Length: 347
Ligand SMILES: *[C@@H]1O[C@H](CO)[C@@H](O)[C@H](O)[C@H]1NC(C)=O
Ligand SMILES: *[C@@H]1O[C@H](CO)[C@@H](O)[C@H](O)[C@H]1NC(C)=O
Image: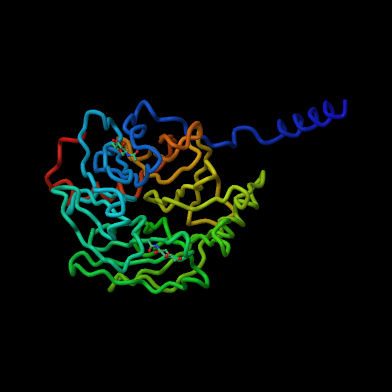
């Protein structure tokens, strides 16, 4: 009887929650069948100028539209030599792939090297400025609880370490994205406990980008992720889940999307407004989302990749209809892209 009463009270309470507030990204496995072939290391989602979607696993960079018929755009050695973790399309350099084990960025066309910088911890993810002259790369060492941020000047072919308050305020860095005006750089940071068995806190930091030099400086906390999630209604518990911030992308108006790895959700926050406006999108089939990007024909479909809830050894893709095109997709519509030769093989 007692259990029946509490069940009834719970049911009444649950149904009193405001209806229609849950945002859900649904399985996009039929639109992006290539995602299922990437396995547990699926990551590094990117968009091309036509809205085609791509992703990487440790060794392969593929089109998600149909990886079974399109050949991979880039294949790495794997093992300790190569670990693809990120990808981005550009007009001037084609598709770029970040390799965390080789500490380099590949140009997929011709399997060429854009640059190698052994001083980088990884890179894990990277972003590209609108003019494609500047790149920012973030990385982490999980066991050491440290991370770094690099600036790559494309014209000079030079990588520079960006000063970050590592070990005191910033720790493992991962997701990295520029604002639509390229003036602000957002970078995630997560802190482990001493023996790396628990994530203690996670934040997104923002840096001011010097318009003349491209160097980011003056880091400050943009959003305290654990505090924001704990303050949501109903409250979320990122500490118990060991939530880790992962891939991060923006739309063309400054709304930021970030995968909440180990949490099966995506954070949505309009950076023009207060952090209390942040919301989460639930994911139908993904338990560990690793990366995301806005694409599709109009550039407004949020595509999320990660490990499946049903089996963490397999990869899944979920999508959500957003109302604004992505920053990367919008930048790729620029003049430099319409005049650049287009690769036809992967559409
Ligand atoms: C990576 O992706 C390729 C292409 O889809 C696939 O053949 C390979 O098995 C994947 N690797 C792992 C470790 O899942
Ligand atoms: C990460 O840091 C540990 C020390 O905590 C070190 O032994 C290891 O080599 C580092 N890993 C990489 C890939 O640099």
